[in-house]
Image (cartoon, rainbow, N blue to C red):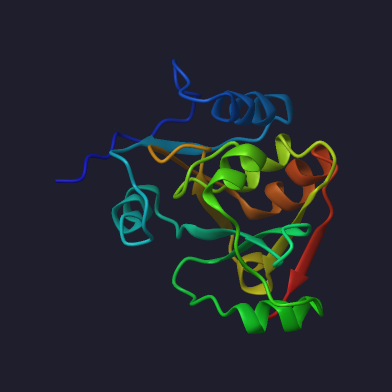
Length: 179
């Protein structure tokens, strides 16, 4: 049975990664409120179904992509139930075809493992090496559900606060595409 905690509105007492700690510190500095849960390890979108119910929102799908040369990187945020098509993504940005970035680059650049990709990794991307790309459909959602940088912590935040407060704080501009 998949375990999910009660809903909390404060940061965890103990952090498992520096990204997780930085996430909650940034939210505190920006005065962004959130609701969060602790869970068993959740890696797939199917694992997120129970989390969605507990937090009364829909989890986004966050994909770490790169070109063949591994010289251009993209963090693509789309709706959790929407299929990803590399061709559509690349066409929308007018770029060469992309694929999933290797696991070792995900750990190095995003500070996460597979299943924990999150917009909060922008905190670690000081040189803006990773382009943040939002699916237009995510922008219409009131709530933004995502990982806190771990596969055992998930949160709900107002989408507008991610776009208007958090990403400017990290000095990242957002590309919005329709796929």
